[in-house]
Image (cartoon, rainbow, N blue to C red; front, top):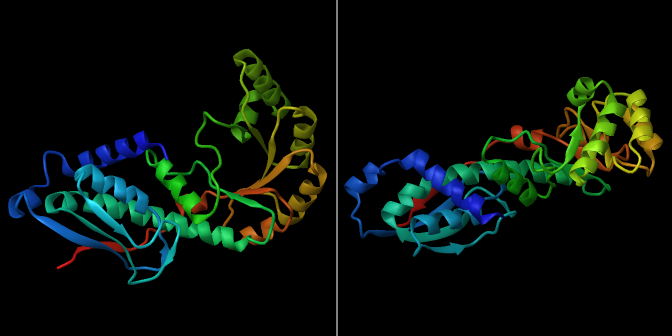
Length: 283
């Protein structure tokens, strides 16, 4: 992980919550007090965010000590203790909500990511996330996807070319869009992976004809299963194939059985449910 991103997230997260001080803790807890707390799992899940929690506690108290009992990516159950942390009491309570909110969100995503992966684990297909993430914490959500066992697609608009329906319509057609990308690459002396989204077999044929030596992957968007299977057969080994559009945990298996190389699902991040956890001082 990018340590600068983690540090910036911690600083901004604490600024949002603490501002000029956690006045409750400052008022009633002695400045020199030190406590030990446990991270208690209150719901079955794939746990994620423990590594992040370490960074948060070390940020608020460089002398904080963590005893990690369960690593990120482990399937846990109600009542499990993920770690113990011993640190300054005021710092502990200042960090509590940032740790819990982050871990609960990340664990929800990791759990759904694992469920998607398990549905197709015996098939030669890669499950991908999308850019349907929460602004400014995409790196955490994509981190959680990886912890759960699925894979990341592009990080953003900057690291992969993806010609979608709006690009096609605004460009005047798929062939024109592809040719303009080719010219753009030449002008900028650059190269990126490239996906073209197609909506039917006509657009598929056009993409295959125009995309030689530049298109990496063809995204088959919202294809019915029979049509998806036919499209995969037409493409053969000429391009990577990807299925997308309304993919859920209930449909992913059948989609994978058509033979596509990749399946992308925004549901992994936008439809996951945070998992319940608490941080309790041990007395």
